[in-house]
Image (cartoon, rainbow, N blue to C red; front, side, top):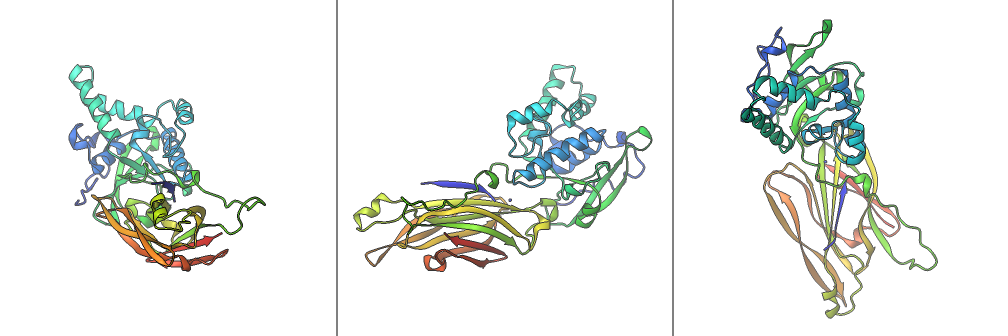
Length: 386
């Protein structure tokens, strides 16, 4: 079986209801297991002396992630190992660039922990190391929506994803006025405010394991004299999201598009059916919140050597929200001497996913040499058989 991975994607705890006019020393969560929540990581970050160097570090990381086809995100695993690296960045190049940071956020976190845990003792040093390792593997990250609007100077409001679908939450306001550093206020932050002021959201990464779309885009090949002009490839050309699927704290929408078919099917007998297996193609497309209603163009291959004997494709579109993995059992259909045969295909689902659309697409739906746009739930997708 061939798999093509393309990167197309609790109750709220008040962060600082009584934090007005308090200095950074007033925000001191005790290090340990209780720090392994989004709210406590947000509180810890708000206690660090974030300055222009650290702002640039996060900005460069989220910009790199976005440029690689992911959301505007900076994973804690990268923050603690390769400062400034975005999701999908070349690690060798990122490691060289990391050397330019004199005081990365990683160092500030280490200093913060060392000041609260007697790291000079063996037990204390082990506790600090255990926490850092837990943070690396937590999947948490800094999400900076609308980072492209940053003025290059303003410090962030720091909040977290409450995880209950809320559209607003409390955030820390930090300031370095007068050469010092302190938490000066707490505010209620929503998506509109995040467009006007820099906001760092601590949320969970769901897409770092996916291959970025930019690395696997395919351009149609021109037909040369020695090639068959009767062969076509089926492409997805673009996608348009008609609504956001999650709270803005969770970031962009990540659409997993699964297709089950058979590449280059030209069996003439039932015996030859045994020579073919289903081809499962998996696209993951990240659509940022501001891209609602905007046609997101790309050119990615669904089925190569599209045969007229391929009658139906299994097609599934989900917006990824995690959960326990399950499967949708379906089939692709081919025809041999006027008889139809099904190939069983299992396409993965997660229990929390929003199923945007699932079913079978008839081969006759795709006109040869032309593009066709269809609506699948709340997304539009353009196909081309070229």
